Amino acid sequence: MKSIIENEKFNTRMETFDWRYNASIVGLIKYFDYLAAKGDEAESDLYEIDDDVISYNSEKITEDRYLLFAEYYFESAMHHRVIEQILKSSEFTDDQIKLVNDKLTANAIMKKVFGEIKFSKENKDIILRKINENRLLLIKETYRRGQSLYANFANVNSLFAEEGSICRIQNYNIDIPKKGKSISYNWDFKTYKAEDEKEFDFIPFAFSKSYEGFFMNNNYSIKQLFDTNNLISDSDNPRSTLFCDLKNSSGFIDFDVEVIIKNRDDDYFETLYIRKDAIKIFMGIENYKAIKIKYKVNDNYYMYFEKIVTDNILNNIKLDALIEILLKSKSNYTYNIKTLIKINKLIYGGDKMDKQMKSAYGSAKRVMKAIPENKVNSYKQKLISAITFKDYERFCEILLQLSSYSGVIFDFAYDLFEDFDENKNIAYTFINALNNESNKDNGGDKDGK
Image (cartoon, rainbow, N blue to C red; front, side, top):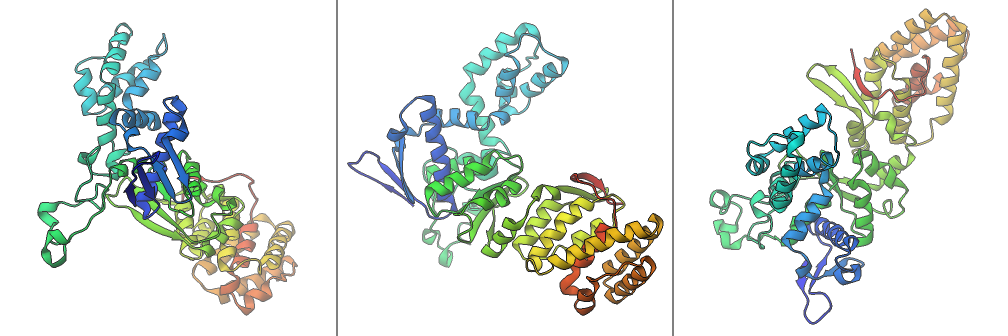
């Protein structure tokens, strides 16, 4: 919540509250740190943090400063900045010339400012001069309407607007003439209460810059809130960073955590809760990178394993189906399957299968040495067929046949005979080990046929 302070060093105070206020606080800190880094003012004169409260001077927030900060923070999304970076050179490749010309017409404001200008080596200075003369306008319109920028988070007409009767944030913003009465008590719009703050304009700076934007609402303290989100803001893969790199933070594992997600394809925010049980599973994962698989089901559908695995962990759903998909694949996913089995074991309940999984792995390797490769593959396909069709009795019969044919004793099999469902990871380990192993990640585009 925000309040006005009188007769003190700072004139505004904001407390952690719901995620909108918390994200605004993170954005404000980044803005003030930017001003301090530029040398405009000392950090101590810009803001002060006390556990769950930030105090600051609202006069330090100006439109020009905000826009220059947006240009700095989202530099790669600013078409004029890309042009400026290229035009620093004295020589240009054909690809660079083409890129500059593409950027000159990249959006409505670029077309308006540069008109019919086409880049050639002779008009470099003209283009640079136009950028300098129109910099704030270029930033404002590019930022305001950018689908990965302000427009992804808020109503484009609300940038720099005073606090309104309707919240400026997407999914909180409504069309008053059409829906004003329907959202109010007794159809009286005067009864509708909405929270809106100018500081909500800083929310875009709090989310990760990825297509699927994340904001970690772990507001145990403002320092922790800022440090956590600063870690994931520039990550190439914030999902991995969020669920793996942060697992070593003691503050992160002490309580359930709320995560706000904004996908650019959606006009709403999603909320998910990371429970302590799920956090323990993430902590036990040794190599999250091994599940970055884009698996081709058909020409129109791909499965993104990392997202599915994350969602399964969060919802305590076993990975059996994913493991079986990769086992059936003609591509060699041995390394990835091994990682998925380890995660699946954690979802099933920890280390109770470790000894028998090691036994299953060793038995499979002895089988590969004892019988011809074509026979190994034949038995492997039979086992895969039985387990994917959930014919566990048939699976156990094939195991007995393979043990007899190879002369290898399967000590692990007794657990499967006793309770196949609860010991399925032992079976997966055995099947996966009937393979020549790869030590590298099999992720990327893979054809599942």
